[in-house]
Length: 244
Image (cartoon, rainbow, N blue to C red; front, side):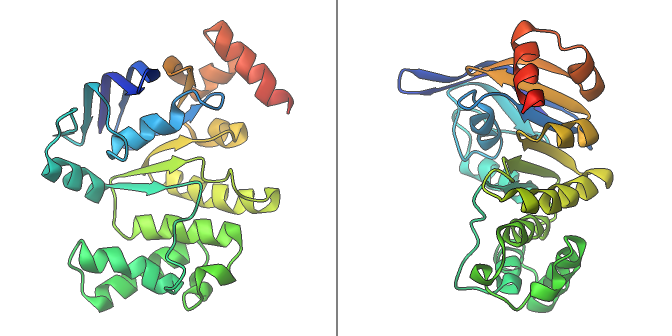
């Protein structure tokens, strides 16, 4: 589904991604972890071209995003790849339902009735259908993030990317968002999630990836990653996060 091969990304002289390669199969759930500034978010933002890489290849469902990717390739990939951010990025002047129906109508050409039916389906799926008529500012952070997930699902993506989706939430709201993501994972959605929630990684991930200083240090099946980390840097990181 996703092939990342020898990808490099610089911000000026800063080498943000250094020769990163990773393959993600259809239906695979990948968690990317690592210290702040390790390149995790930059990597997944390159997958839907929110960031551009300077060297290497990224191919998403057969569509190539090279350094000189054609605009139509970028549009094609973004139609198939949903993304949920740290901040919810909801339109504050639109109701929850309007936030969800906007893209299916304008991008996918759905009728208002089709878009509304799909929005209610996914609001039910994230257990928040009763909030459809409210504005984002009337919801808790956890509820807003679930709306953001439902909004991405309304585009019926083949891949979901999560960029630290719980990092701006209060502790009691984190579980409700992770529960929704766990449900999605159980239904076979291809997912890449940048997160510090190691309990979620253990429970949901097929593969756990550890990044540090722009490099992909480790990528292993979840059970192996936690029980027998291969590199010393991974071992040290796990000691830190598991004791907090």
